[in-house]
Amino acid sequence: MTVNQRPSEASSLSIEDLVFRYKKADSPAVDTISLSAEAGQMLTLLGPSGCGKTTTLRMVAGLLSPTSGRIKVDERDVTATPVHKRNMGMVFQNYALFPHLTVGQNVSFGLEMKRFPKGERVSHIRLALERVGLEGYIERPTTALSGGQQQRVALARALVIEPSILLLDEPLSNLDATLRASLRDEIRSLQKRTGTTALFVTHDQQEALAVSDRIAVMNAGQVEQVGTPEDIFNRPSTRFVASFIGQANVLDGEIARATDRTAFVNIPGLGELGGRYDTTSGVPAVGEPATVAIHPHRMTLHPADQKERGAAQVISSVFTGTTVQTTLNLAGRTLRIESLTSASSSAPVSEEWVRLEAKPDDAWVISS
Ligand SMILES: Nc1ncnc2c1ncn2[C@@H]1O[C@H](COP(=O)(O)OP(=O)(O)O)[C@@H](O)[C@H]1O
Ligand SMILES: [Mg+2]
Image (cartoon, rainbow, N blue to C red; front, side):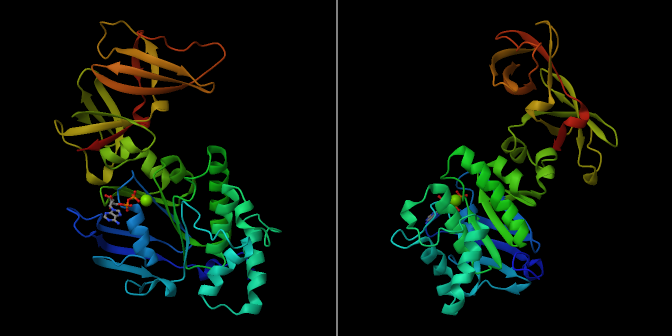
C-alpha cells in the first residue's frame, strides 16, 4: 500500500436523529437529522445560511455535544468521545492558522496534538505539503502566503494526521472566484486520491454539485433530500430543493392527467405542462396539487401573439456571451430562461411576446 492511497483505512460516518438546541433558542438549530457517508465518500451539507450546517459539523467534530441523537464512526458510537480522540481533520472558512508560526510548524500542530513521535514528524509534514502543492514551503512564514496558499496549509494540517473523517466548513468562501473553482477541484481530487471520507459544508449549490458523491440539502435545521448531485438537480423531492438548486422555475398547479411515466400539470395562465415524476410513490391522482420544476436552460422560447394562451412577455434579456438569460412575466409570475447563443440568432427583446416550450423528459413534477 502506498502512502497516497489508503481507502482500506477510510471510515464510514453515520448520524442518527441528531438534535441541537442552543440555549434560549425557540427552535432547535438542528432538528432530528439522520445521514450517512460511506467510507471514502464526500458527503455535502448544502443549504442557506442559518440552516444548521455548521452546528451539525461541530457536533461531528466533537466541539458541540448534541442535545440528543448519536454519531457513529465505523459503527462505533463516538457521541461522547472528546474532540482530540475522534481523529477528525478540520478546515474552516477563515483558515485558522497561527500567524506567528511557519508553514511547517502549523502543519506540525496536528501531529503534536496527537503526540506523534518527534523524529517522524518532518517526513509526514513534507508529504502533506506535497499533497497540497506546497512542497518547498515548510520554512516560510504563514503571513507571507496568499489566501489560497493559506487554505492549502490548513488542508495539509487537517490531512497530516490521516483523519478518519475530514470536515470542511465553507473552506472556499474567503477566496476569489477563479481560485475558488481551482481549489475546489483540487480538494475533490485530493479527497478521492487519499480515499478520505469527508463532510463538506457549503451554501453554494454549484460547489456542492461539483465536489460531492452525495448531497444533503438542509432547510431550517432539517434535511429535505439526500441524493447524488444528479438526483438533487434533476429529481428534487421538495419545492424548496427545486428552487434552491440551479434556480429552477417552479410552477404550481394541479394534476390534469398522468401516465405511468409522465404527469401533466395544469398551470394557471399557462396550460398543461408535462414532466417525469417519482414513480415509486405511484401515479399522481387527477386534481391533486403539484409543482413542475424546470431548469432555465431546459426551456425554449418561440415568438407568440399576445392573445395566445400561455403567452409570456419578456422583461429583460442579458447577453453573457455563451448564453442569453431572459426574464419573463407569465401571468404575474417571473420565469428565467437560459438559451445558448449562436452567431446568427438574436436575443429576445424587452416587451416581446413569447411562448415557452419544455419537453416532458426535461421537467420534473413534485406532488405537494
Ligand atoms: N452560538 C450560538 N448561539 C445561539 N444560536 C446560534 C449559535 N450559533 C448558531 N446559532 C443559530 O443556529 C442556527 C444554525 O446556525 P449554523 O449552524 O451556524 O447555520 P449555517 O452553518 O447553516 O449557516 C441559526 O439560526 C443560528 O442563528
Ligand atoms: Mg456555517
